[in-house]
Amino acid sequence: MERSEVIRRTQFWLKEIVIGLNLCPFAALPFAQETVRYTVLDTIQEEEILAQLKLEIQRLENTPEVLLETSLLILPKAFPDFLDFNDFLYTANTLLEGEGWGGQFQIASFHPYYQFAGTKAAAPENYTNRAPFPILHLLREESVSSALETVKNPEEIYQRNIKTMEELGAAGIHRLWLKI
Image 1 (cartoon, rainbow, N blue to C red):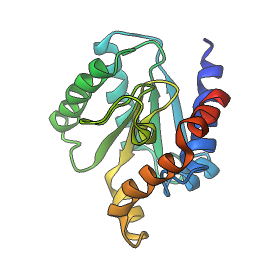
Image 2 (cartoon, rainbow, N blue to C red):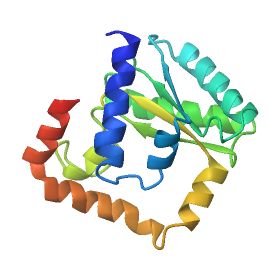
Image 3 (cartoon, rainbow, N blue to C red):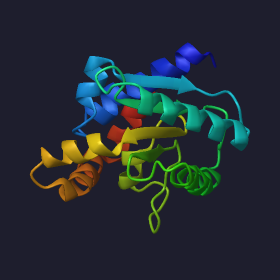
C-alpha cells in the first residue's frame, strides 16, 4: 500500500472515529490546525522503528507546539500480531525513559486487533484503541496535562468511550470500519 493511502486511511480514522465519536476530546484541535505529523514506516525491524521513534521525539522536542503538537508513527507492515506489538511498547517506553524523556513525552498505542486485558477480542471497548494500522502516537506530557485540566471528569472519558462503542454495537462498528 502506498504511503499516501496509509496516511489517508489514518486521517479518515482520526476524523470519523476518534474525533467523530469524540473518543479523544483533545484530538480535534491539532487535527484541524494540521499540527499532527504522520510518519509511515515500511520496516518490520524493531531497531529501525526505535531509531525513528527517537528521531520523532527529538523533532517534537525541537519544534514549537504551534507547528507540531503530536506525531503518529504508522507501522503498516510491522507487528501484525497485537501481542507482539504490546511487547514492543515496553521496549519503546524503555527508550523514552532511557533517553530522559519520561515525564516529557508519552506513547499512546493503537492496533487493528487491540485487546484490553480480560476482554474478548470482539468486545466493544477494544475498538476505542483500534486503528487501521499499528500506531505509536507520541504525545507531549505538558499538552496532555493541559488538555485534561479542561475536562470536568477526565477519568470518565474511558467509560464514556466504552458506552459509545456499546451503543454502536457490532453492526455500527462494522459499518464504520468498512469505510476505512
